[in-house]
Length: 354
Image 1 (tube, one colour):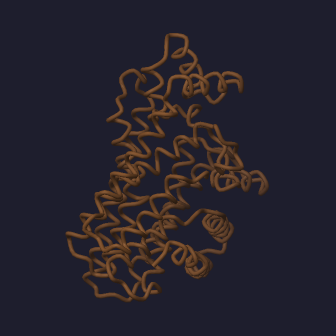
Image 2 (cartoon, rainbow, N blue to C red):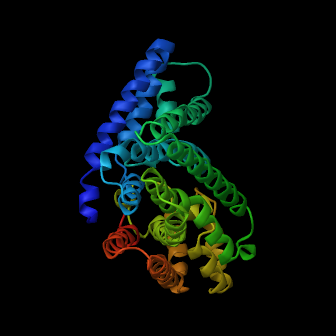
């Protein structure tokens, strides 16, 4: 099977999402009609854009493990998209983001709803509280979708166990990211950065989706371990590419979000490497914008130039290639067609422009 065949199933994934979110709206009507505007906003956010990488990777894992009917795995593939949705709702509050998937973030959408409805209190607090709670309301949808595939019960238990571990590691990675964003850059190591990349992004973006699909097809530990090791390396490469895009070298229309990682104070590999390979004036320029969203556009440009001139951008590209090659080298035991599919996936994840 080629990657284009899996990508062609994105319409089926969207249909599954639409069905489940419509069901959630129907349940909300029974609980209280007042919930409907909020569920509609969450539905719109979930269906608005998104590359559906994780869903496609779950289908890839299912195929690699010998799954024959990809329709069996569609609900679980859709579950990864609702998971991504509620994680982003929370993440955007943490990062004070304004744009997501070429539209307003959920907390800003809810703040606008507060203003337009002439509600009492502060619109910002209402928006953030509503976004966090809507994220919480989306997680049961994720679990329900994971329980939907018509497979033996033992596989469903294993699938939920993988989901639980994926969520745990993602939260740990997020906590480390929040913490290290408050630590002086000079005290953050490349190892720290790569640990966050693996936990916060690689696990839920690549390795767990592959493993979850394989679990649905009845895969045993050797294959699951192979997909874990390969997926972790490819996932780190995926996140390193995301960091390059998040540096602001591409415009908002390309990356689909408004905040720059420098303004957020992210201790990315680009920042950590640049800090160690620039001079005092370069570090001062970086320090001026790190974690400071009120920095001027000119200050941002100067900081970006420091990163380029330090060699950090070239170094990140080298590390992206190295982790991609490492991930693919860990697939030697797989059949030729499965390796070919994973090679396509590796290129998709690391050569993207958004």
